[in-house]
Length: 311
Image (cartoon, rainbow, N blue to C red; front, side):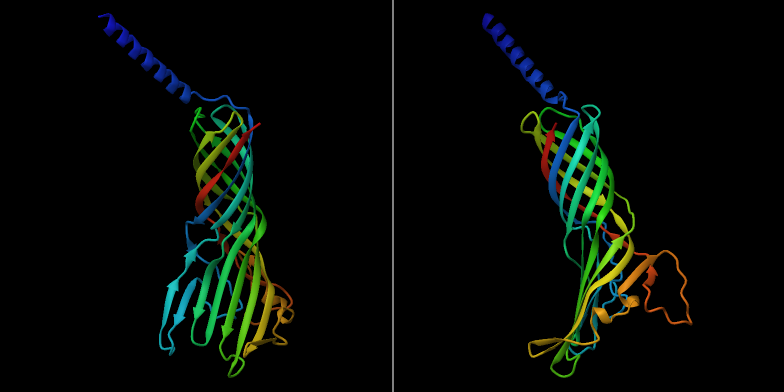
């Protein structure tokens, strides 16, 4: 009987110890109010849409958001629709935050985004091969809120807030090669690089992750993040433009067909929601061309990892 009583007492003691430890693991940790989070990650394209017209001068033969292949005798062609975003790439981030209590806080992050090159148009035929690619590079700020149950060990959390681009631009690189365009045995190569500047735009983000403490003031984290961002274009400019004749491996710039030879109307563009245009008077070649407003889709879904320092 004494043996049974001792056994029961031991079981009760062990169960009590286990429950107490479990409760301790679920007890919120009293952190300092301020923290800094440093991280990096990668975003994949999400929320794909049609790409914008990257060739308003119609120099390449590329149709907007298409991949066209013409067969060898020119009797038929294959057309593929291209959709995507400029939101795929690597991101580095530094964020400062303040916790009102162990469960909720506010933060402000600064991020640099180094976007991947994305093909937005292509034409392949026996006579012409053209391709246009784009990428987004720049900085944004992200005010948001931080929510967590603040468990002692592995702790889940959620972040959500706004994305505001503050610097950077969209670059479009275009190349077109016309076979025998300068006569038998001489190809013509056209290369152009354009930059698009943005108007003030606001998107939003949401993230869910987990953190794990390494010490009292240091923890590591991993999260999945969704960003939805559409950037309104303000203006665009062709920054580089050249036309080259290629004969037998030798190349030579063609006079009169370089960047300096393009009128302002063909190398500078202003986006507008509404504008008037004469149908009888030729456009002013010394003024930027007005074109309808376009939006750059920079949405993406990805992951971030990093460390958090509690001050």
